[in-house]
Image 1: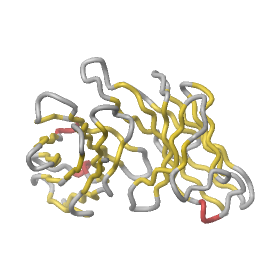
Image 2: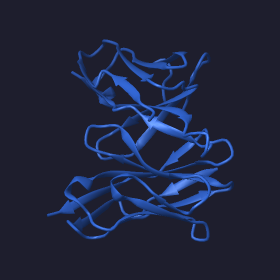
Image 3: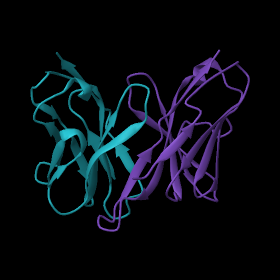
Image 4: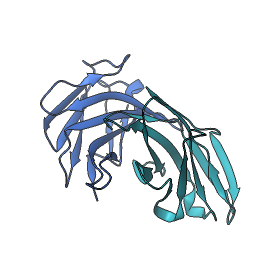
Amino acid sequence: AQSVTQLGSHVSVSEGALVLLRCNYSSSVPPYLFWYVQYPNQGLQLLLKYTTGATLVKGINGFEAEFKKSETSFHLTKPSAHMSDAAEYFCAVSDGNTGNQFYFGTGTSLTVIP
Amino acid sequence: GAVVSQHPSWVICKSGTSVKIECRSLDFQATTMFWYRQFPKQSLMLMATSNEGSKATYEQGVEKDKFLINHASLTLSTLTVTSAHPEDSSFYICSALGLAGVRSGANVLTFGAGSRLTVL
């Protein structure tokens, strides 16, 4: 079985500062890992994903995440926060063998302070 | 890229009426679709997994007679909230499972924009 833990339900950063959203996972099989973003009153949009290969993956809007197997982590980062990054971010894991079940973290609300 | 259309985006109804929400995969076939419920400032709560041509699998605690799910084709799943009551007011989101691409070989969830249900 898989599970996801997102540390910090709320994160605030100043505009231009580094964004770091934490995600740790638990999986008994090789995982596929995802970050989704949700803007108010909208559905979820895929930011980036890790399946196989390079452990540092780049996504849209300047975000990237690094898969660290030894730390069972998949933290999301962005070098410089923009006001438009304010949103809810969800980390998700799926079974790397079947890929048919997705497990979501509880989400992290990112606030960007001007 | 893959697109999932969800309709309506917002619906207001009287207590006791039934409301149908549609979820369509526009440019890919989705054998599996998921329905979620989301309360304000909370994560997604999986309600059911919908497979084309078969009965939906409901999560524990979700009333299947209350939330009717039909996955009639590879591109359409519907959620009907029957005899809606104010406590059913929520944001309902669907997602469809499709291949991310031949290279990755991984399934990716594509989400609809969500449907806000307000029951008066």
